[in-house]
View (cartoon, rainbow, N blue to C red):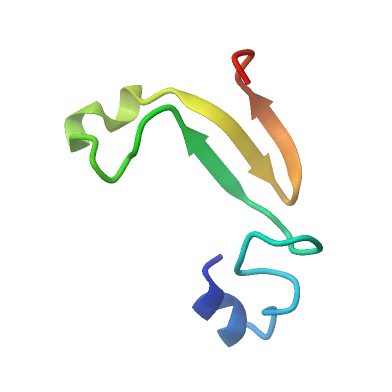
Length: 62
């Protein structure tokens, strides 16, 4: 959830940014998905997935 969505939902004190005490849902890719061609996105390696603050996937390289 982005900071604006968290504010709109009344959850700005627990969500919307990466900070201690905030819920975290995020994915870390091996390459920048913004600069990766759309056709290559499905093959982009995922290094880390965090759901509600708990890592659910961690690449062994980390």
